[in-house]
Amino acid sequence: METKYLALPGPTYVEPDVLLEMSKPIFNHRNSKFKELLIDVTEKTKKLLMTENEVFFLTSSGTGAMECAVVNCFSRGDKVLALINGSFGQRFADIAKQYEVEVIEHHGTWGKGFDQEKIKEIINEHGDSLKGITIVHCETSTGVLNDIKSISELRVSEDTLLLVDGISSIGAESVETDQWGIDVILTGSQKVLALPPGLAIIAFSHKALLACENSKLPKYYWDIKTYRKFYKEKKETPYTPAIPLYTGLLKQLKELESKGFEKEIEKHKNISNMVRTAIRAMGLELLNDDHVSANTVTPILVPEGIDLKEMRTILLKKYGVDVAGGQGKLEGQIFRIGHLGNVEPLFVISVLAALEMTLKELGHPLEIGTGVKAAQEFWFDGK
Ligand SMILES: *Cc1c(COP(=O)(O)O)cnc(C)c1O
Image: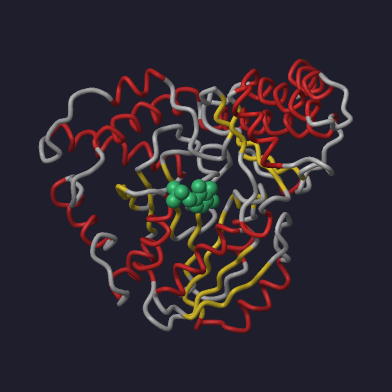
């Protein structure tokens, strides 16, 4: 069966009217139509990110924006603290290491939040010499939402930039870029924004832009100074933009704005709580605790005696449901249900129903309908 339920933490389901909007004829990206579009998406994105900082768009996946953040903010040998409690935190560190940035890796436990005291010690120890901190807001590999605001406040030096990967959180979690003092925040089109993959968004604070002027790491396509100059002087991107994705983005941003950014966050929170309630009712175990769990993805331990590969195959072939496996050191141990973007209660209930039938088929002792019932009840009166 073809995939009908894309229950991954990205890419996510794209609405037909968005696809239709994106299928309109391509136009010249150096004409006034594109300039207006670029101004529009820039201004609306600032609202989404709660920022007055400068926003740029890159034709790339989210990882490209992570690399862009690193190469623009630092120079070879700069000391950067990489906070790692999952595979995307590690990715940020690995990118910086490729450029010979002096990365101090701090490893938290996968599936848990960070110990603030330990981080405070490291920050204090390095003082002014610490040029940056990298962190992932929603660590998609474990479903943990890291506390950006608190970590931002631990900084002791004006020179320490805070770089945040908000790829799977922006739009579904509260992200107050300016209030929290985030210097670089970034996301991708294929997650909560519910667009096809290929467009990344990145915002730089005034302090980060000053760092860009001094950064000596090699870059060409990622050089934000060029994007800045083009936007300032011509309201254009330096290189050919992914025009349809900008058209789709404008539609999505308008939609989000009219629904209310807060309401969308609330929707994701309710859906996430609904999934967690259902999973517990089914007798399955969640990887993370409620107080650190993100709104966009639920990580579930593979039940004893269940072959994950077989389970995912049945889900996909029989029911058209695609859930994600585990990443890095959690590969084979967990599976993840993504519920972000255009998700609705019935989408999740369908996924849960398929999961119950699949587990039953594989001989797992569970009473069919328990999870679905818990989800329905949660939605009906619990939320
Ligand atoms: C999806 C994701 C990425 C990777 O994005 P790509 O678009 O695949 O490059 C990075 N970080 C987080 C937190 C993500 O969820």
